[in-house]
Length: 119
Image (cartoon, rainbow, N blue to C red):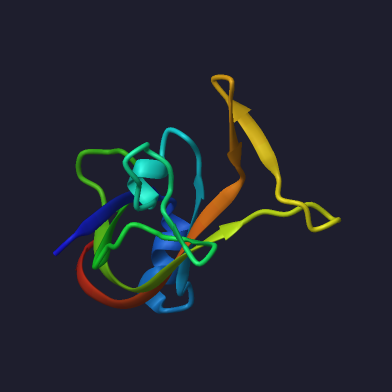
């Protein structure tokens, strides 16, 4: 099982356990793209028919904060997709990182059942 580990706030953790938060969003930055995207040989996010390909995870292990004894839950990932951000004129938003341009984007995980929890 391929598991992504993420830190979240208590409020969102409680919503996931209650089933009211069914999606998790994470901004993709140059320093996190290998965590969220399938990468090509040059280190860029792969695309298929113009659609960026998210890295495949079976589940997400959510941790509340950074304390040693913290609540956690393992939650199924039903689906994932990458969304590019656009400005009001529908142009893709571009930033620069270390002199290199990158597109503003986020990965969206559709959450399923809570597989395991430690509260």
